[in-house]
Length: 391
Image 1 (cartoon, rainbow, N blue to C red):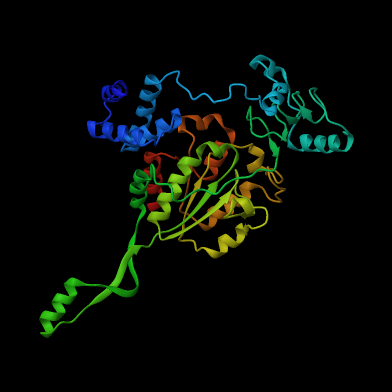
Image 2 (image 1 turned 90 degrees about the horizontal axis):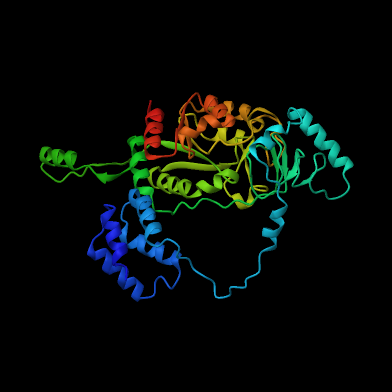
């Protein structure tokens, strides 16, 4: 019954053969996909696709062949989640209506006004232009719109215009065991390797052994230290918020880097580097490291890689107190310059397509701080970044 699917893959010039097709049928007969479209999708993709570069083409063929098919739950009378109904209170405006709303002022004016609102407001508010609430045009609250405001209590961004976010967020650690898609990244990272022989002599030096044995007339074993990659790398991963949609590619990069570099240390941060970083996202509020200690612990010969979309409010980079998770006494710009003063070999990998960088003010600011050393998180981008680190 899947002959049409097989021929559609062949018509799209995907390298599939009868062997993969029979493998898929055997897996289906064994019950590996149950009766869910999602399960069948992943099973057929595993059977047919051997190279990550063909994944997008496979997805297009699958969508075309099985268009309109979806799994229906046994109970068609499922309740509508309360959260969906609550979202009906969100404010939606046309672009023309958005353009008519004016910002309250600069950073200092907005934060001072928020302080007054917190002191004056005594009850929940919905809609309106002044109080902290939902679904309104006030600079403070959730699910409304304002060209420059403070987002409070909203799960995720909608318009990307908040200058500060007050939320308690939970992030998960990146999985460094991910294998899918890491092969090409490993090949790109290998170009950064610098081999050296240091440590205890544990490997047989065949050439010197033969030479010494011939010279002395008896077996004279010569040993040398094992040849290994001497490059030392620090990786800083932006985690949470707008980076949630890029977790997969970050995990692939993380997994490849852990394989390729013996001397590798990683840290997490959110949006911009400040006075502290951490290694476990589940305990980041209690167990963190001073950024200054990191600068003092790892020598200047380490190469630094930042991984993040650089998408944030410009205030998070330029102003004290701009962080969305805590009150930072010094701006992110100050901490970025401190790190770059210590590590001259530093680059930034951005998962956002390079053609979109010009639309984000914060991305341009961060790119300037990196002195132009920002590269897209693609194989070609990693190649360019490696060349920069090797200069």
